[in-house]
Image 1: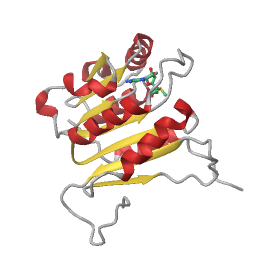
Image 2: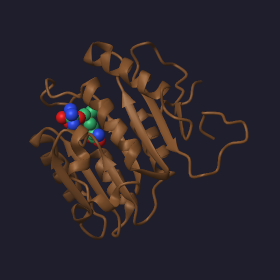
Image 3: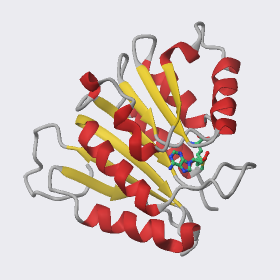
Image 4: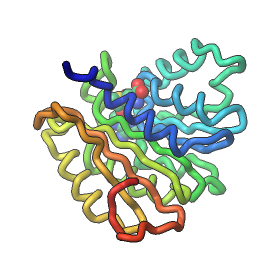
Length: 207
Ligand SMILES: C[S@@+](CC[C@H](N)C(=O)[O-])C[C@H]1O[C@@H](n2cnc3c(N)ncnc32)[C@H](O)[C@@H]1O
């Protein structure tokens, strides 16, 4: 009997939770229907902040509705700022003091489920946003990227893999292993910025 498969969206939450703490600053680079924004808002606590980006008004409306519907004792919307902006331009919208202080950045690439499929992430802008994300991450901070091989004619995944291969050594990355994956299955990548403690072997794998 095989173990039930955990959705990669949930695995991404599990990794992200390891780098979150009360008062943390987090970024959702693709707000979509708001599942990740809600998760981040719940984990940063009342003193934390979440900045969420999407190019579509419909996504930001769905995210706002999801935050408002979540009963958390106090309004989660108060911890979240939403921007209808391409994620490659996110640094223009964050307070300058948050540069180097972001605990988690989440990317769930592709299009809005149930929405306009033409409004989709593209490899070139995704990589620009990732470069910024690395720059704005705090030591010990983490980035999750959920990517879809068939998407953007495979260009986005190819650019993403080249980006990962060229990362400097203080950025460890790994791919979450899925036993039953096919060449068309979604892929989850996790990047962590070293917090000063280097592994003795210098390996690039996450502990
Ligand atoms: C798979 S959905 C994200 C799902 C979302 N994280 C959730 O928890 O529901 C991808 C989203 O990325 C958005 N998107 C596409 N291109 C973008 C860009 N350049 N910048 C920001 N968001 C973008 C789409 O509009 C879509 O809503």
